[in-house]
Image 1 (cartoon, rainbow, N blue to C red):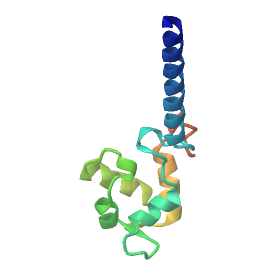
Image 2 (image 1 turned 135 degrees about the vertical axis):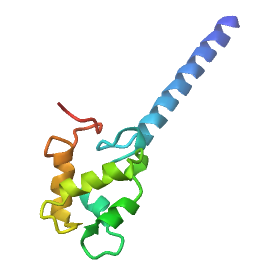
Image 3 (image 1 turned 30 degrees about the vertical axis):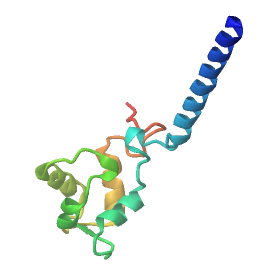
Length: 121
């Protein structure tokens, strides 16, 4: 009887552990992004930044937008410097092309992050 109890207890523990692991894997985002969730595409983020929908992102829009995916917010000076680096034609606004190129260049790789959202070196 004691042997049956131990066997049942061990089997139940294994079933619960397997179920918990499966649930965790099901909630893990695919395509990168890390613990904060999947990263937005450049187009999605640009659309979020372009508050008035005119196809350009001004510095004011860029500074007013929330940080993506719950990332820690940078201070105003850091965000302003980032915006100015992306504004390659110095017209005071970002086109989608400038934003996409700047986003890639500021990461130092010129392209998207690999699986898992971690920078490659």
